[in-house]
Image (cartoon, rainbow, N blue to C red):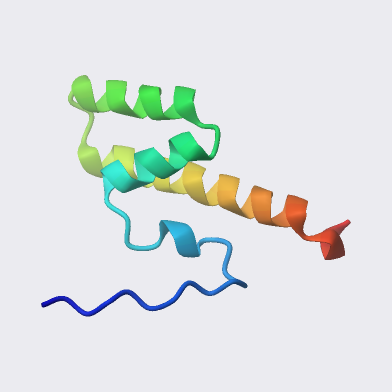
Length: 78
């Protein structure tokens, strides 16, 4: 039986993305208002682009959106 995941650190804006598979990252990207980017990534996979390349690009985009969202809602950054 797998160990349960540790609780998310509320101070870590990237915690939601840690340990996700490519499919999980694509789903998260869609929830972060990245429907078009997720469609492009899926198209790249369909066009035989290496899954590792797509994973790295999607991960960067998800991390960028998570950090941007965390900064927007952190009134200390205003």
